[in-house]
Image 1 (cartoon, one colour):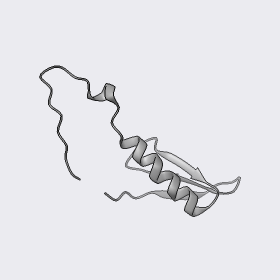
Image 2 (image 1 turned 30 degrees about the vertical axis):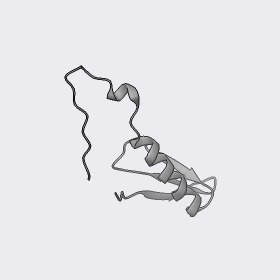
Image 3 (image 1 turned 180 degrees about the horizontal axis):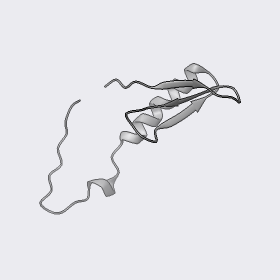
Image 4 (image 1 turned 135 degrees about the vertical axis):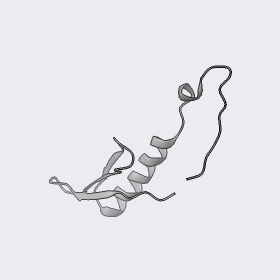
Amino acid sequence: MQLKVVLEPSEEGGFTVLVPALPGCISEGDTREEALANIREAIALYLEPVEDDLARSPDSEIAEVAI
């Protein structure tokens, strides 16, 4: 999966990165490379399912879809 990210220079130095397709998914880093590595981790955590999210009624079915 590929997502577009917005990489912006921070006033304090370094970079802030956000993912428009994932509201609230934001990270930062001292360098461009560090900021991009950090946003990859943030995206992975954002998309990781939480057990409470999977707990539904007994009739529920869990499926996976590729995008």
